[in-house]
Amino acid sequence: MTESDDPAVLAHQLAELRLEHRDLDAAIERLSRLPDADELTVKRLKKRKLWLKDCIARLESALIPDEPA
Image 1 (cartoon, rainbow, N blue to C red):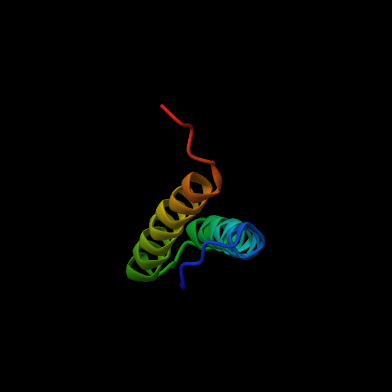
Image 2 (cartoon, rainbow, N blue to C red):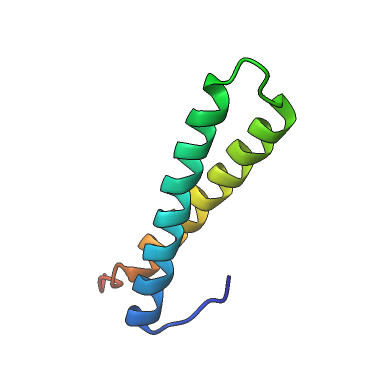
């Protein structure tokens, strides 16, 4: 992920990350319902989902303008 100061670029990156996060959530849900689900794969997907959540939080923070003190 590349960092940028352009709000439009940040908003686009944020939208992409949210979409991937949602997709991972659905994939984890589907895999978890399978009786023979690979637990390692599920753990890796969950770890990726947490990383995405952190990236989303950083981008959301970057989009909030700094308030003068």
